[in-house]
Amino acid sequence: MRVAVSGASGLIGSALVHALGERALVLVRDRTRSGLWWDPYAGRLDADALRGIGAFVHLSGENVASGRWTEARMQRLVRSRVETTAFVARTLASIRDGPRVLIVASAIGYYGDRGEEELDEASGPGQGILAELCARWEAAADPAREAGVRVVHARFGIVLARHGGALARMVPVFRAGLGGRIGSGRQWMSVVSLADAVGAIRHALAEPALDGPLNVVCPEPVRNGEFTRMLAGLLRRPALFAVPAFALRMALGAEAAQQMLLSSQRVLPRRLQHSGYAFQHPTALDALRAALDLGG
Image (cartoon, rainbow, N blue to C red; front, side):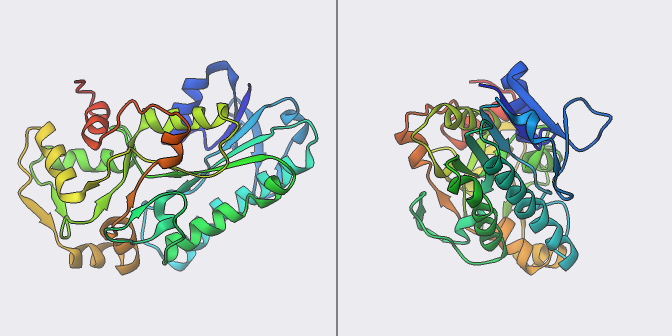
């Protein structure tokens, strides 16, 4: 199967393209780069180039954690997810012999802040900006689904990789001996290794019974306090400090701090496990070791 991939320069996208090799058709917005040019905001994509392509993996979207959530930025976040997904879905719906599988990135932010509640794909949406964004993001794929395309919403947890994402920002702080829990440290974190994020996508491509939401997290959520102790231990540094909640709210804004760093999401990958996926890194410790290239 050949697979079209948008967002191919991102953390997950670049790893997926590497794993797919020659089977990947990379979508690019810069005409100087190699690949299939498109402009989703202008509705520009050569649909004929997708004929005979088996699947489309849509990973585009502006980084939620790259700045304060101003009104203008929130509009960009929504547009980069909802508008581009709707365009991809309409395009696939219009192609008779185009991709019949669409995997769209989503996030466990869909569930909102749920405390101690165990969450799986049958759990309803939460409240807050991120939950609303994820719900709109997933609904934007409906035109493809209605046209008979198998649609999977990959709800990613925190993807652990040393060269990108949240962990890349944490490691220098912890190496300096300044790391520690966030807020109370009691909030649940649901993480996944980069290898398993890519593995879950490839599994979903190959497993025709999978459609709808798919939690892409390792099977064992971990509390923030324990996660930070594990990271500090692996780096052989103390975890003496704590970032108070009020400081995060001042730095990032109350909404962003609460939903990105202080919320509790105890998410389980039940559909992945029931469909036979075997995790390479089933625990947060395994995923951290892999990300830090520590082995064992």
